[in-house]
Amino acid sequence: MALTDEQVERYARHLILKGVGVKGQKRLLASSVLIIGAGGLGSPVALYLAAAGVGRIGLVDGDVVDLSNLQRQIIHTTASVGTPKVDSAAASIRALNPDVQIDAHRELVDASNISALIEPYDLVIDATDNFAAKFLINDACVLANKPYIHAGVVGFAGQVMTVVPGEGPCYRCIFRDMPAAGEIPTCKEAGVLGAVVGIIGSIEATEAAKLIVGVGEPLIGRMLTVDALTMNIRRVPLPKHVPDCPVCGEHPTITAIDSANYIQPACAI
Ligand SMILES: [Zn+2]
Image (cartoon, rainbow, N blue to C red; front, side, top):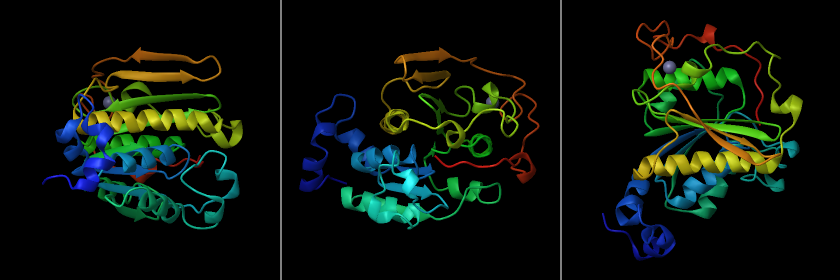
C-alpha cells in the first residue's frame, strides 16, 4: 500500500534515511509491538515507536498514574494523575500519531496471561522493573519463539539486551535464577534519575526499530551497560550459546509457564 501524502510528510526524515526509506517505513507501519509496563521505560519506548509509525502498539499495565511517577514517566501528565496508565499513555500516543492502533491492556502481566498477551505481536518490550516480570517475559518469549528487548534501570545505571530466540543467549542464560526479594535494591528503594530511564528506554526503542526495519547490528549476544555517573557505556559480549540454560538450553527444565516460578514483590518504575 502506498504512503499517503500526510505520511510522506510525517515520516520524511525516515524516508530519506539510508537503511530505512520507504521499504523500512512500510515495515514499521505493518509492525506490532507489545510494551509491558507503561512507566519510566515504557514512556520513551511508546512515544518513539508511536512517532516512528509502528502500526499497532499494545500497552500492558495495571497501575494508575501517581504524582511520584511524573519525575520520569514522561508519557503521563499532571492532569492524568489517578487515571489508568494505559489510558493516559494511549491518549498521548493518539495525540502524537493517529496512524497507530493502540491496544490498552489494563492488567498486570502474570503467568496466567502472558502467553496470550504476547501472541499477537511481532516483538515484545520489557519495560518493567521487577525480576519476577523480567524472568516471566524472558521465559514466555523464548517458549513462544518471540523476539524481545530486555532493559533494567536502577539509580544512575541501566542495561539493555536484545533476545532473539535461536540467534543468541536469553536473559536466563546470563542470570540463571531470580534474586531473592531484597537481594538487589529496586528503584523504589534506591531511587532512579529520570533521564536515565529515558536513555535506556530510548535504546530499547532504537533496538526495536532496527529489528523491525532489518538494519544494523542488534544487541543480540551483547549486554549494553550504561553508567550515567561516569558516562561509561560498554557493550559486554555474552556467551553465544549456553547449553545448560533451563529455558533455551539443550535439556530445558522450564517447558511451560508455571506461576510458582515467578513470585516476587513487584516495583513499578
Ligand atoms: Zn537461555
